[in-house]
Length: 89
Image (spheres, rainbow, N blue to C red):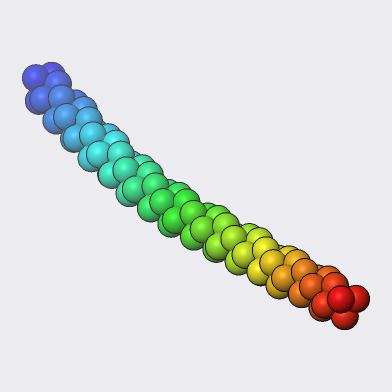
């Protein structure tokens, strides 16, 4: 009887150890997955930030181009007006 009890206890201990090991492994895997997910999220955020920066730069360039064209057009118009005035004179 005592031997049986000892055997049972040993088996239980082994099972507990196995369960603990499995739990630890699962935790490690979960941590790894979380880390990977975080890394992926960070990469995605970086990509999004880069895209946003690129879009902002493009918008700024477009506005600058339009402003330049508007300025040139205004100057040309003024020049034309001045020429007309000169001609009139």
